[in-house]
Length: 210
Image 1 (cartoon, helix red, strand yellow):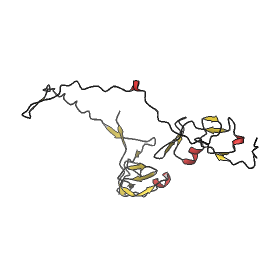
Image 2 (spheres, one colour; image 1 turned 135 degrees about the horizontal axis):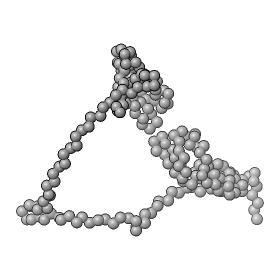
Image 3 (cartoon, helix red, strand yellow; image 1 turned 180 degrees about the vertical axis):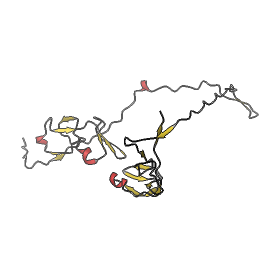
Image 4 (cartoon, one colour; image 1 turned 120 degrees about the vertical axis):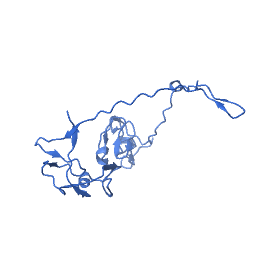
């Protein structure tokens, strides 16, 4: 019988999702590994463990999410098996019961006449009345992107509002304004500090009048 020297034993990496801990085979036991039952799913900036539904957009926080199962460490590569669909659950193809066109030698094709269907009249458009949104302090809120400041209706001179004429766009991890696509930021605070490209008057944010 060959005796393995624990000091000479080589530590291997556990390949279970969410573990990635080095261990020695002689010190492996049930409960030594805390892992996730399914591999992670990455979509844009979102990272998710499908087995427990835990997610995060930050990599360090995502890797700190504790596993939902315990067991022994394993050095075997995780293989994602393809789930085969039960033939009994596959819907059968429904054959088209509509009459097929009859072709003649002259190239003329007879088709079943389509019955005339009278179009329903469009419903009358209802005009929705709007009013400015008023804060608890009795001020208006500017609707311009990059501004969103409170202001007095009587104190709205030309040039008091600095804003973006476009819309904010969030793609992958970048944040930028459609009117200033050349300035892109990944940090939210840096995105809010992008200098506005337009100067004018405040415009109140509108809500439905009750």
